[in-house]
Length: 384
Image (spheres, one colour):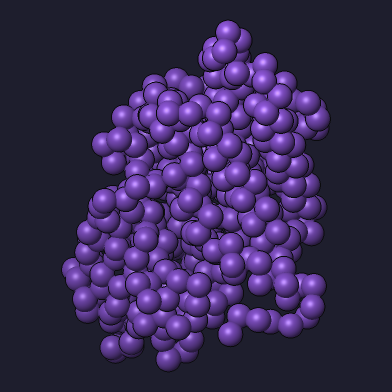
Protein backbone atom coordinates (compact mmCIF):
# COMPACT_ATOMS: atom_id res chain seq x y z
CA UNK A 1 0.00 0.00 0.00
CA UNK A 2 1.30 3.46 -0.92
CA UNK A 3 2.92 5.45 1.89
CA UNK A 4 1.09 8.59 0.82
CA UNK A 5 2.78 10.95 3.29
CA UNK A 6 6.18 9.32 2.69
CA UNK A 7 6.73 8.81 6.41
CA UNK A 8 9.20 5.97 5.93
CA UNK A 9 11.37 8.26 3.84
CA UNK A 10 12.22 9.95 7.15
CA UNK A 11 13.78 6.70 8.40
CA UNK A 12 17.53 6.32 8.09
CA UNK A 13 19.20 3.32 6.44
CA UNK A 14 19.50 1.33 9.68
CA UNK A 15 15.85 1.93 10.55
CA UNK A 16 14.72 0.83 7.09
CA UNK A 17 16.83 -2.30 7.39
CA UNK A 18 15.15 -3.11 10.72
CA UNK A 19 11.76 -2.48 9.11
CA UNK A 20 12.48 -4.84 6.24
CA UNK A 21 14.07 -7.52 8.42
CA UNK A 22 11.21 -7.64 10.91
CA UNK A 23 8.59 -7.47 8.15
CA UNK A 24 10.23 -10.45 6.45
CA UNK A 25 10.34 -12.39 9.72
CA UNK A 26 6.67 -11.73 10.35
CA UNK A 27 5.75 -12.70 6.79
CA UNK A 28 7.73 -15.95 6.94
CA UNK A 29 7.34 -17.10 10.55
CA UNK A 30 4.15 -15.52 11.87
CA UNK A 31 1.48 -14.80 9.26
CA UNK A 32 1.19 -18.39 7.91
CA UNK A 33 0.37 -19.65 11.43
CA UNK A 34 -1.00 -16.85 13.60
CA UNK A 35 -4.65 -17.44 12.64
CA UNK A 36 -4.34 -21.02 13.90
CA UNK A 37 -2.57 -19.88 17.05
CA UNK A 38 -5.35 -17.39 17.69
CA UNK A 39 -8.03 -20.03 17.15
CA UNK A 40 -6.23 -22.55 19.33
CA UNK A 41 -5.26 -19.98 22.01
CA UNK A 42 -1.60 -20.91 21.64
CA UNK A 43 1.68 -19.06 21.24
CA UNK A 44 4.97 -20.93 20.64
CA UNK A 45 7.07 -18.57 22.74
CA UNK A 46 9.87 -21.04 23.40
CA UNK A 47 10.30 -21.64 19.67
CA UNK A 48 10.13 -17.97 18.71
CA UNK A 49 12.18 -16.42 21.51
CA UNK A 50 15.63 -17.54 20.25
CA UNK A 51 14.78 -16.33 16.73
CA UNK A 52 13.63 -12.97 18.08
CA UNK A 53 16.81 -12.80 20.15
CA UNK A 54 19.01 -13.58 17.16
CA UNK A 55 17.42 -10.66 15.32
CA UNK A 56 18.30 -8.38 18.24
CA UNK A 57 14.66 -7.59 19.03
CA UNK A 58 14.67 -8.47 22.75
CA UNK A 59 15.66 -5.45 24.80
CA UNK A 60 16.74 -3.88 21.52
CA UNK A 61 16.67 -0.31 22.85
CA UNK A 62 18.93 -1.17 25.80
CA UNK A 63 22.73 -0.95 25.72
CA UNK A 64 25.20 -3.61 26.78
CA UNK A 65 24.66 -7.17 28.00
CA UNK A 66 24.09 -8.46 24.47
CA UNK A 67 21.36 -5.92 23.70
CA UNK A 68 21.27 -4.23 20.30
CA UNK A 69 21.34 -0.67 21.63
CA UNK A 70 19.18 0.79 18.89
CA UNK A 71 17.53 4.19 18.95
CA UNK A 72 13.90 4.73 19.92
CA UNK A 73 12.58 5.09 16.38
CA UNK A 74 14.18 1.76 15.44
CA UNK A 75 12.46 0.12 18.40
CA UNK A 76 9.19 1.71 17.35
CA UNK A 77 9.54 0.54 13.75
CA UNK A 78 10.18 -3.01 14.98
CA UNK A 79 7.07 -2.87 17.19
CA UNK A 80 5.01 -1.62 14.24
CA UNK A 81 6.08 -4.52 12.05
CA UNK A 82 5.64 -7.08 14.84
CA UNK A 83 2.10 -5.93 15.59
CA UNK A 84 1.23 -5.98 11.91
CA UNK A 85 1.60 -9.71 12.52
CA UNK A 86 -0.26 -9.84 15.83
CA UNK A 87 -0.56 -7.83 19.03
CA UNK A 88 0.43 -10.95 20.95
CA UNK A 89 3.79 -11.06 19.19
CA UNK A 90 4.51 -7.41 19.89
CA UNK A 91 3.35 -7.90 23.48
CA UNK A 92 5.82 -10.74 23.95
CA UNK A 93 8.71 -8.62 22.71
CA UNK A 94 7.50 -5.56 24.63
CA UNK A 95 7.10 -7.41 27.93
CA UNK A 96 10.47 -9.10 27.56
CA UNK A 97 12.36 -5.93 26.72
CA UNK A 98 10.49 -3.00 28.25
CA UNK A 99 8.86 -4.56 31.30
CA UNK A 100 11.17 -7.39 32.37
CA UNK A 101 14.63 -6.43 31.05
CA UNK A 102 14.33 -2.64 31.38
CA UNK A 103 13.85 -2.55 35.20
CA UNK A 104 16.82 -4.89 35.70
CA UNK A 105 18.89 -2.78 33.29
CA UNK A 106 17.80 0.52 34.83
CA UNK A 107 17.47 -0.30 38.53
CA UNK A 108 19.24 -3.62 39.03
CA UNK A 109 22.58 -4.42 40.62
CA UNK A 110 25.58 -5.33 38.48
CA UNK A 111 25.12 -8.93 39.56
CA UNK A 112 21.44 -8.96 38.53
CA UNK A 113 22.28 -7.45 35.15
CA UNK A 114 25.03 -9.97 34.46
CA UNK A 115 22.92 -12.89 35.61
CA UNK A 116 19.76 -12.17 33.60
CA UNK A 117 20.17 -9.68 30.77
CA UNK A 118 22.49 -11.58 28.39
CA UNK A 119 20.28 -14.67 28.48
CA UNK A 120 17.09 -12.63 28.17
CA UNK A 121 18.40 -10.69 25.17
CA UNK A 122 19.25 -14.02 23.50
CA UNK A 123 15.77 -15.42 24.16
CA UNK A 124 17.18 -18.18 26.38
CA UNK A 125 15.31 -16.83 29.42
CA UNK A 126 11.75 -15.47 29.29
CA UNK A 127 10.62 -12.77 31.69
CA UNK A 128 7.33 -11.30 32.91
CA UNK A 129 6.27 -8.22 34.87
CA UNK A 130 3.99 -8.35 37.90
CA UNK A 131 2.22 -5.11 38.80
CA UNK A 132 -1.54 -5.39 38.14
CA UNK A 133 -3.59 -7.18 40.80
CA UNK A 134 -7.14 -8.57 40.78
CA UNK A 135 -8.39 -5.53 42.73
CA UNK A 136 -5.79 -2.94 41.73
CA UNK A 137 -5.28 -2.12 38.06
CA UNK A 138 -5.49 1.60 37.37
CA UNK A 139 -4.54 2.36 41.00
CA UNK A 140 -1.36 0.33 41.56
CA UNK A 141 -0.49 2.31 44.68
CA UNK A 142 -3.16 0.28 46.46
CA UNK A 143 -1.49 -3.05 45.69
CA UNK A 144 -1.77 -5.70 48.40
CA UNK A 145 1.16 -7.89 47.45
CA UNK A 146 3.58 -7.45 50.33
CA UNK A 147 7.21 -8.30 51.03
CA UNK A 148 8.36 -8.42 54.63
CA UNK A 149 11.88 -8.70 55.98
CA UNK A 150 12.76 -11.94 57.75
CA UNK A 151 16.34 -11.72 58.92
CA UNK A 152 18.44 -11.18 55.80
CA UNK A 153 15.66 -12.53 53.55
CA UNK A 154 12.34 -11.24 52.25
CA UNK A 155 9.03 -13.13 52.39
CA UNK A 156 6.70 -12.31 49.49
CA UNK A 157 2.94 -12.89 49.63
CA UNK A 158 0.13 -11.81 47.32
CA UNK A 159 -1.07 -12.15 43.74
CA UNK A 160 -0.93 -10.48 40.33
CA UNK A 161 -3.26 -10.81 37.35
CA UNK A 162 -3.28 -10.36 33.56
CA UNK A 163 0.42 -11.12 33.30
CA UNK A 164 1.75 -11.70 29.79
CA UNK A 165 4.24 -14.61 29.66
CA UNK A 166 3.50 -15.46 33.30
CA UNK A 167 3.14 -19.25 33.08
CA UNK A 168 6.11 -19.67 30.71
CA UNK A 169 8.47 -17.18 32.35
CA UNK A 170 11.77 -18.13 33.94
CA UNK A 171 11.96 -14.90 35.92
CA UNK A 172 9.38 -12.38 37.12
CA UNK A 173 9.97 -8.75 38.02
CA UNK A 174 7.42 -8.30 40.81
CA UNK A 175 6.43 -5.06 42.52
CA UNK A 176 5.31 -5.24 46.15
CA UNK A 177 4.56 -3.08 49.15
CA UNK A 178 7.25 -3.06 51.83
CA UNK A 179 7.81 -1.09 55.02
CA UNK A 180 10.12 1.11 52.93
CA UNK A 181 7.61 1.70 50.12
CA UNK A 182 7.01 -0.13 46.85
CA UNK A 183 10.03 -2.20 45.80
CA UNK A 184 10.85 -4.38 42.83
CA UNK A 185 11.98 -8.00 43.21
CA UNK A 186 13.65 -10.28 40.68
CA UNK A 187 11.93 -13.62 41.31
CA UNK A 188 13.05 -16.84 39.62
CA UNK A 189 9.82 -18.67 38.87
CA UNK A 190 11.30 -21.92 40.22
CA UNK A 191 11.29 -20.42 43.72
CA UNK A 192 9.10 -22.46 46.14
CA UNK A 193 5.73 -20.81 46.73
CA UNK A 194 5.56 -19.22 43.27
CA UNK A 195 2.81 -20.38 40.90
CA UNK A 196 1.45 -18.98 37.62
CA UNK A 197 -1.75 -20.60 36.31
CA UNK A 198 -2.72 -19.60 32.80
CA UNK A 199 -5.89 -17.57 32.18
CA UNK A 200 -8.18 -19.27 29.66
CA UNK A 201 -11.39 -18.43 27.75
CA UNK A 202 -10.02 -15.16 26.40
CA UNK A 203 -11.59 -13.71 23.26
CA UNK A 204 -8.71 -11.28 22.73
CA UNK A 205 -4.92 -11.70 22.64
CA UNK A 206 -5.47 -15.41 22.15
CA UNK A 207 -2.08 -15.82 20.47
CA UNK A 208 -0.47 -14.73 23.74
CA UNK A 209 0.11 -16.37 27.12
CA UNK A 210 -1.75 -14.58 29.94
CA UNK A 211 -1.53 -15.75 33.54
CA UNK A 212 -2.06 -14.97 37.18
CA UNK A 213 0.86 -14.99 39.60
CA UNK A 214 0.60 -16.23 43.18
CA UNK A 215 3.16 -15.82 45.93
CA UNK A 216 2.75 -18.03 48.99
CA UNK A 217 5.56 -17.28 51.46
CA UNK A 218 8.07 -16.94 48.64
CA UNK A 219 11.46 -16.56 50.33
CA UNK A 220 13.91 -14.32 48.52
CA UNK A 221 17.44 -13.22 49.39
CA UNK A 222 18.37 -9.57 49.72
CA UNK A 223 20.07 -9.88 46.34
CA UNK A 224 16.61 -10.26 44.71
CA UNK A 225 15.69 -6.62 45.45
CA UNK A 226 16.15 -4.04 42.69
CA UNK A 227 18.39 -1.59 44.60
CA UNK A 228 18.00 1.42 42.31
CA UNK A 229 14.44 2.55 42.97
CA UNK A 230 11.77 2.87 45.67
CA UNK A 231 8.16 3.82 44.99
CA UNK A 232 5.84 3.85 42.00
CA UNK A 233 8.45 5.61 39.87
CA UNK A 234 9.96 2.19 39.21
CA UNK A 235 7.03 0.35 37.64
CA UNK A 236 5.58 3.48 36.01
CA UNK A 237 8.86 4.16 34.19
CA UNK A 238 8.75 0.61 32.84
CA UNK A 239 5.18 1.15 31.63
CA UNK A 240 6.27 4.32 29.84
CA UNK A 241 8.81 2.26 27.90
CA UNK A 242 6.19 -0.34 26.99
CA UNK A 243 3.53 2.23 26.08
CA UNK A 244 5.96 3.79 23.63
CA UNK A 245 6.05 0.43 21.85
CA UNK A 246 2.25 0.31 21.81
CA UNK A 247 2.06 3.75 20.15
CA UNK A 248 4.02 2.32 17.22
CA UNK A 249 2.66 -1.21 17.36
CA UNK A 250 -0.98 -0.35 16.84
CA UNK A 251 -0.04 1.48 13.64
CA UNK A 252 1.04 -1.91 12.32
CA UNK A 253 -2.23 -3.56 13.32
CA UNK A 254 -4.21 -0.73 11.72
CA UNK A 255 -2.14 -0.93 8.55
CA UNK A 256 -2.79 -4.66 8.25
CA UNK A 257 -6.54 -4.05 8.57
CA UNK A 258 -6.54 -1.26 6.00
CA UNK A 259 -4.51 -3.33 3.54
CA UNK A 260 -6.95 -6.21 3.90
CA UNK A 261 -9.91 -3.87 3.38
CA UNK A 262 -8.41 -2.24 0.30
CA UNK A 263 -7.59 -5.57 -1.33
CA UNK A 264 -11.05 -6.93 -0.52
CA UNK A 265 -12.76 -3.80 -1.83
CA UNK A 266 -10.93 -4.14 -5.15
CA UNK A 267 -11.85 -7.81 -5.66
CA UNK A 268 -15.27 -8.25 -4.03
CA UNK A 269 -17.92 -7.70 -6.72
CA UNK A 270 -21.49 -6.67 -5.93
CA UNK A 271 -24.03 -5.10 -8.32
CA UNK A 272 -21.64 -5.91 -11.18
CA UNK A 273 -18.67 -3.90 -9.92
CA UNK A 274 -16.08 -4.05 -7.13
CA UNK A 275 -17.39 -2.62 -3.87
CA UNK A 276 -14.35 -0.33 -3.91
CA UNK A 277 -16.03 1.51 -6.77
CA UNK A 278 -18.84 2.68 -4.50
CA UNK A 279 -18.50 6.11 -2.97
CA UNK A 280 -19.46 4.94 0.52
CA UNK A 281 -16.69 2.35 0.52
CA UNK A 282 -14.13 4.84 -0.76
CA UNK A 283 -15.13 7.29 1.95
CA UNK A 284 -14.53 4.63 4.59
CA UNK A 285 -11.14 3.76 3.11
CA UNK A 286 -10.12 7.40 2.83
CA UNK A 287 -10.90 8.17 6.47
CA UNK A 288 -9.19 4.95 7.54
CA UNK A 289 -6.06 6.08 5.71
CA UNK A 290 -6.23 9.54 7.26
CA UNK A 291 -6.38 7.94 10.72
CA UNK A 292 -3.51 5.60 9.90
CA UNK A 293 -1.29 8.38 8.58
CA UNK A 294 -2.03 10.62 11.56
CA UNK A 295 -1.18 7.78 13.93
CA UNK A 296 2.04 7.16 12.03
CA UNK A 297 2.96 10.84 12.28
CA UNK A 298 2.29 10.80 16.03
CA UNK A 299 4.44 7.72 16.52
CA UNK A 300 7.32 9.11 14.49
CA UNK A 301 7.22 12.49 16.22
CA UNK A 302 7.21 10.91 19.68
CA UNK A 303 10.04 8.61 18.64
CA UNK A 304 12.12 11.57 17.57
CA UNK A 305 11.35 13.31 20.88
CA UNK A 306 12.43 10.18 22.76
CA UNK A 307 15.68 10.00 20.84
CA UNK A 308 16.28 13.65 21.70
CA UNK A 309 15.67 12.94 25.41
CA UNK A 310 12.59 15.17 25.45
CA UNK A 311 9.69 12.69 25.67
CA UNK A 312 7.40 13.20 28.68
CA UNK A 313 4.95 10.69 30.23
CA UNK A 314 1.98 12.89 29.33
CA UNK A 315 3.08 12.84 25.69
CA UNK A 316 3.17 9.05 25.86
CA UNK A 317 -0.38 9.16 27.22
CA UNK A 318 -1.40 11.31 24.25
CA UNK A 319 0.09 8.80 21.82
CA UNK A 320 -1.34 5.75 23.51
CA UNK A 321 -4.82 7.24 23.74
CA UNK A 322 -4.91 8.65 20.21
CA UNK A 323 -3.25 5.81 18.33
CA UNK A 324 -5.06 2.90 19.96
CA UNK A 325 -8.44 4.54 19.38
CA UNK A 326 -7.49 5.30 15.77
CA UNK A 327 -6.37 1.72 15.20
CA UNK A 328 -9.52 0.29 16.74
CA UNK A 329 -11.68 2.55 14.57
CA UNK A 330 -9.80 1.42 11.47
CA UNK A 331 -10.20 -2.25 12.42
CA UNK A 332 -13.94 -1.83 12.97
CA UNK A 333 -14.39 -0.07 9.62
CA UNK A 334 -12.35 -2.77 7.90
CA UNK A 335 -14.59 -5.39 9.47
CA UNK A 336 -17.63 -3.65 8.03
CA UNK A 337 -16.13 -3.52 4.53
CA UNK A 338 -15.39 -7.24 4.63
CA UNK A 339 -18.95 -7.99 5.70
CA UNK A 340 -19.47 -11.56 6.87
CA UNK A 341 -15.97 -12.50 5.74
CA UNK A 342 -14.67 -9.96 8.24
CA UNK A 343 -15.49 -12.21 11.18
CA UNK A 344 -13.46 -15.18 9.90
CA UNK A 345 -9.79 -15.88 10.57
CA UNK A 346 -9.25 -16.22 6.84
CA UNK A 347 -8.61 -12.48 7.07
CA UNK A 348 -6.60 -10.71 9.82
CA UNK A 349 -9.22 -8.07 10.63
CA UNK A 350 -11.30 -9.68 13.40
CA UNK A 351 -8.14 -10.94 15.08
CA UNK A 352 -6.63 -7.46 15.14
CA UNK A 353 -9.95 -5.92 16.18
CA UNK A 354 -10.32 -8.28 19.13
CA UNK A 355 -6.70 -7.77 20.14
CA UNK A 356 -7.02 -4.00 20.05
CA UNK A 357 -9.91 -4.19 22.52
CA UNK A 358 -7.31 -5.41 25.03
CA UNK A 359 -4.66 -2.94 23.96
CA UNK A 360 -7.20 -0.17 24.59
CA UNK A 361 -7.32 -1.24 28.21
CA UNK A 362 -3.92 -2.58 29.20
CA UNK A 363 -0.94 -0.48 30.29
CA UNK A 364 -3.30 2.34 31.14
CA UNK A 365 -6.96 2.43 30.20
CA UNK A 366 -8.20 5.10 27.84
CA UNK A 367 -9.91 6.72 30.84
CA UNK A 368 -6.64 7.05 32.76
CA UNK A 369 -4.79 8.50 29.77
CA UNK A 370 -7.70 10.90 29.24
CA UNK A 371 -7.27 12.10 32.82
CA UNK A 372 -3.52 12.50 32.31
CA UNK A 373 -4.26 14.85 29.42
CA UNK A 374 -6.98 16.57 31.42
CA UNK A 375 -4.48 17.26 34.19
CA UNK A 376 -1.96 18.54 31.63
CA UNK A 377 -4.57 21.01 30.35
CA UNK A 378 -6.08 22.17 33.64
CA UNK A 379 -3.44 21.49 36.24
CA UNK A 380 -6.09 19.59 38.23
CA UNK A 381 -5.65 15.88 38.97
CA UNK A 382 -9.06 14.20 38.68
CA UNK A 383 -8.08 10.60 39.42
CA UNK A 384 -9.97 10.40 42.71
